[in-house]
Amino acid sequence: RARSGVTRRLLVGALAPTVVFGAVVATAGAVANATLNDAVDDTNAAPDIVNVTVDDSVANRMRVRVHLANGQALPASSRINVQLDLDRNPNTGVGGDELVVRYTDAGAVEVLRWDGIRLSPAATDGVSGSLAAGILEFDLTLAALGGSTSFTLRASSQRSQDIGGARLTATDFGPPAG
Image 1 (cartoon, rainbow, N blue to C red):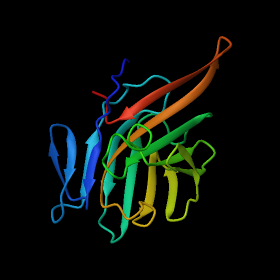
Image 2: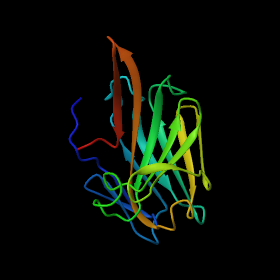
Image 3: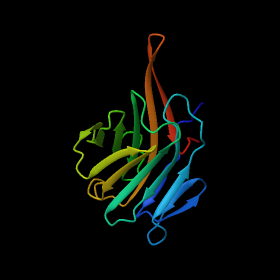
Image 4: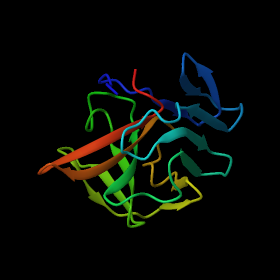
């Protein structure tokens, strides 16, 4: 399906969210959990993200859960990205994002950090990820987030395939673009 260039993001600030116009606005002192839902079967060949949950109920840690509808494991040539705008400035990073945490179909966790020019491979210290029963969980320490306690977050899935001599990549966003 067609997507606009804007993706709804979870706005996280010491987490503790309130839902406003389809976005999660986090403020200190309320509930330490936020979930945004995405329609089931709204995707093409990419893993279908049905919701994204952010939980900061453990001190100095954040857990992001990406729930998938169409599989217990990622198909070949697939990945899930969680992109974070750590300074909430759309003019820094790539598309505003200074940190990307990726889980690949091989079960690897990769971290890309803004180096002032581009998102470059970085150490995975303080970051872990696992996929079981169609739920991808990323755990990040506050240090892995560069100490940021207020940021926006979005998740996407991609699957690349060779079709008719061309390499095509299908994408799903959770929550949906709009």
